[in-house]
Every structure is written in C-alpha cells, then in structure tokens.
Image (cartoon, rainbow, N blue to C red; front, side, top):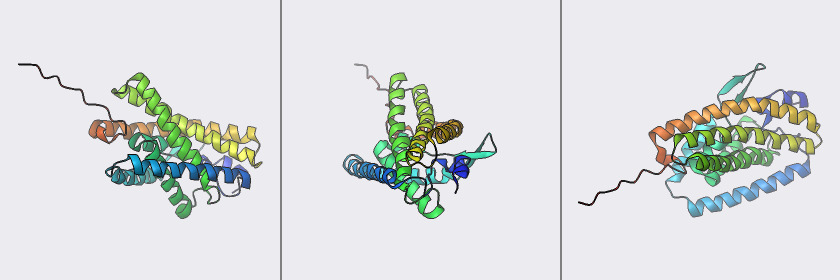
Length: 235
C-alpha cells in the first residue's frame, strides 16, 4: 500500500499497515501496549466478577461484527465503527481495553486489517486512546451533567465517541510523521479531516447501542444508573 492510497482510504487509516512506522516508533508503541494490557489483565482478574466474562465475549463479538459494516461518508468512501467507547461504557476501561485488543489482533491476523509489526501501535491508538481515554471522558461528562439521567449518558457517550476517533487519528498521524513516512502537515490534515466525519458515524452507532441497553438492561452498563430508593413510611 502506497502513502497516497493510505491517505485516501480512511476505513484503513487507523489500522496502520506494515512499513509505515520505523523501528523505534513501533517498539515504543509495543512497550506501552504490553504494559497497558498487563495492567488491564491484573485489574480484571482482581476487580471484575465472573459474570463479566460472558459479557466481554458478547461485547467482543458484537463490536467485531459491527466493524464489518461500513457506512458511507462524503468523497465516495466509507468508514466503520471502532467501538472503543462502547466497550468502555459496557465493560469499564480495563476489560474494555482487553476486548478491543483481542478484536484488533483477530482483524490483523485473519483479515490483514492493519499490519502485524505495528499491531502495538494500532492497539494503543484505538484501544488505549479509544477505550481508556473515551471511557474517562464519557464518565467525566456524564457525572457532570447527571449520572442518573439519559441526558448525561447521551452527551457523555456522544462527545467521547467522537473524540476517541479523532484523537486516535491524531496519534496515528503523529506516529507516521515521527517515522518519517509522510510529512506531519500532510498526514495530520488528511487523517483529521476524514475522521471528523467518521467520528459522527461512530457517535450515532454508539448512541443507538447504548440507548437500547439503557432501556432494556441498564444493569449491564459498567456505571449502571442507581434505582431510586423507596422510602417506607412509618405506620
């Protein structure tokens, strides 16, 4: 894949192909990713209940399937769901990051969606930034507006979903530029312009999924809304 084809293929742009990162940049990304996954494994084993394991499997399967569906964007091309914020909202940042890491590994190995040598960078951009960063941004906004209300949930999910895509695109652009593959001004402008639009699709899909769960099974949310307490009058 040439530099030009990479820049005009936003559906692949966050999945960096082999050959686009130099060895130092790739190694730094791998070290950061391995450290994050190791910490996530420890936190999940220590803090999560056994009932979270089936939910992790279901969430991974849903995100993987949803990523296969492309939505059109202006310019005659398409984007697809990343799902990092959705995984964080359902599972929390630690389990969500593990789920997204597994999804990206399967995509790279079986579908050649992103390179194997740069898998660490792809997991970091879309797993750490997309899931970890997306979750805490969503949580801060939701708790500021109203933890118990759908309005707080919706605004938090919408902002975090969009930002997770754009920030991941910026990180990928910086890594490519640091490797000397494409000048920073070129790759940053191309990546951000495409993913500003792709982020809108990410936001809509995530909102629809979270809204359904909020109505049907709000207890499946990681920070589930509390049921209003009932006061029992003294007789």
